[in-house]
Image (cartoon, rainbow, N blue to C red; front, side, top):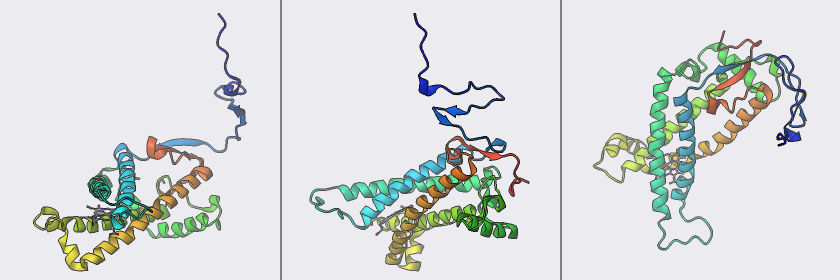
Length: 260
Ligand code: HEM
């Protein structure tokens, strides 16, 4: 019997030994190793679960929300006998409860999480953070070099403010959303808890704010994914997979502002 042969394209050249890294993998040259990387565990399981559940809920809320705002906007949409809007509302309200549940987990994790997840990590509190934020923005604008930009293991001050603004927008959506939702049952608990918002702003204004803020959730993921991909390319740390595995690689030789 002949022994199975390794397909040529899987050959790693030369064979890997601890002190000799491969020069080619899958026929592609491996770039020279730069720096010394170490793996750090940043995002714990509840935060990662919350991230993905919230992402799915927000996607469902955007799609169903735009349908609720302008039902049957598609050309030739069949309106008679269709329950599409009822289904959209059901999806919207189910996803809304899911989003509110993830918000509760996140608030708890602001206290219970590790130091990269807790409340201070979400706000650039020190004046040094604000100075570093300007440097970071210049770096993102291709005006400042990476090696001259302060480094953070967790979120840099720009990301801190960026993510905090998302939480603020989510709060606006939950408060205005539940205020609208409560109107259907004026003797219910939700109405009792949130109708002050309608009384304060007027129902149409609440609806308007709910609609306009939706656009923030359309723009945010695009920029969020751009910055995540950008840092993966420039920092080589596997930051994108950190929101699945929990950890990423950082260069051991660098000085980190949030890990003195
Ligand atoms: C990121 C989160 C959310 C997004 C993107 C979103 C989006 C939308 C949009 C675009 C509309 C249509 C507005 C209009 O033009 O009239 C809408 C309606 C509505 N949303 Fe949301 N929403 C979110 C969260 C919530 C939450 C947490 C609730 C809480 C229950 C909620 C409850 C409602 C209600 C009650 C309506 C009106 C439904 C109707 O008139 O039948 N939304 N939402």
